[in-house]
Image 1 (tube, helix red, strand yellow):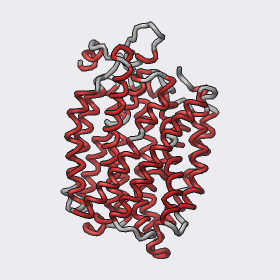
Image 2: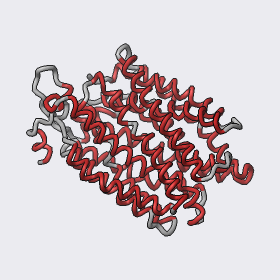
Image 3: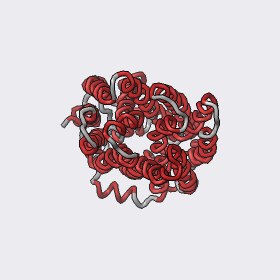
Image 4: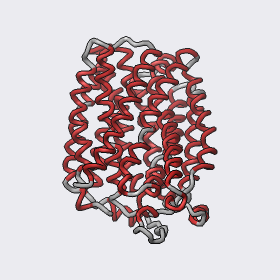
Amino acid sequence: MDRVMSQTRSDNPAVRGPRYRYVVLAMLILAYTFNFLDRQILGILAGSIKAELKLTDTQLGLMGGVAFALLYTTLAVPIAWLADRVSRTWIMTAALALWSGFTMACGLAGGFWSLFLSRMGVGVGEAGGVAPAYSLIADYFPKSQRARALAVYSFGIPLGTALGVLFGGLIAAYVNWRFAFLAVGAAGLVLAPVFRWVVRDPVRGGMDAEPGAPATPPQAPAMGRVLATILPKPSFWLLALGAACSSICGYGVAFWLPTFLQRSFGLSLPERSMFYSAIALIGGVAGIWFGGVLADRFGRRSKGAYALAPALCFLVALPCFLLAMNVPSRVWAFLLFLIPTGLNLAWLGPVVAAVQHLAPASMRTTTSALFLLINNLLGLAVGLWFFGYVSDLLAPRYGAESMRHAIYFGLGFYVLSAILLIVASRRLKHDWVD
């Protein structure tokens, strides 16, 4: 019913004016910032939580990865299917309130299982936060601007990561880790009603209509039809698995790098909070924007550029990470970490934009959720656990340096990701839907 009402309020972006789309984009970025803030804050608090609750690296990896990803990935598809039929803004508002509430619950946890279940609750909420946003952006921005718009939306990742690391670490250092969870969760609850008041659900496919033609919302298809459209396309699997391999390393490094900075560089909690938050913010924003602009520019000549550009970024990121981890100077380490941190996120605009063009407008939310299911089930669930497990496995041999060697192993996923995306670049033109 809300969807029908939304279509009668002249919510076509072309009717409301170009400025409003940027207001909506700003609100989506803000919501995504809280998404990653609540998601990534566990990484900077890991040391304090481990000490108080007597946990291992493997258990921390399970809480950060499996606990969050289990329901986050599986519920995202049915929620996205629902979002193709009802108001996407209502779904995102409810999701924001839910994950913020469970973030507050993390601050009340008394042991491994209570924190594990609270992190599962955060995942339940965030399952409704991303795929609907991808679909909204595709309906607010024309094709020629989508990769950049999606890249700008993805600024929420480095912004949320940086704020989570900075404020989470400082609050934990000067108050405690429990209050850090309570504070960021409460802020998200305040944002939820504001988000619903500002963001309108536009006509689906309205920006894909021919100039002068009426924007008619397409009928949402059955799940079976979506699966029959998307799953046979090789480029979908290559993009999803390529992104997933990069996310195994990307999410893993993002979660465990503060621990590495503590154990191998000897940084205190406030020091590593400021050090890594600056890396995440500067490198992440620059890399995401670079990827979006690169794909939009070269994508006009070849659809394959949407996959080829991030593949090349991953191949450059790998040696930069290795070099940054082995320089004696903190200043040089900071400058070198900026490069792979940016290149690690450069895939977001190009790949997500390409996925949006593998299906018609009526299937975009569900298609995005299927992509995120694969990407996050492997990237989040496997990535965070992998680094923690390998660190515990290598601890008897390397001691405090075990996390360094775990990251060495994990960087190999960049090579696999690059190979898959290079193959995808040769298939995109065939599978592309204009």
